[in-house]
Length: 72
Image 1 (cartoon, helix red, strand yellow):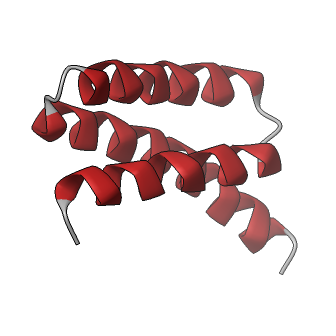
Image 2: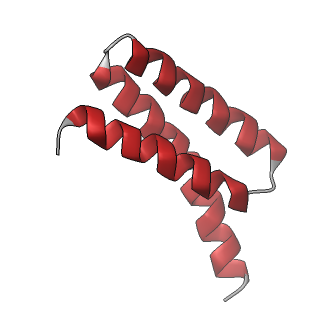
């Protein structure tokens, strides 16, 4: 899979996963990384875009895992 397609897929996945998070501070931080990823993607700086979207996913995934663990 090309890096452009991978980043597009990760941006889409973020948009879906963020809906599960209610913590406004985490959402704000994650959205900043998401917006940075889109900015760098538009500039064709795929390396930085990939890093930014992965930070965004890390924040969201940590909260989602905590929620899953509490409901287990």
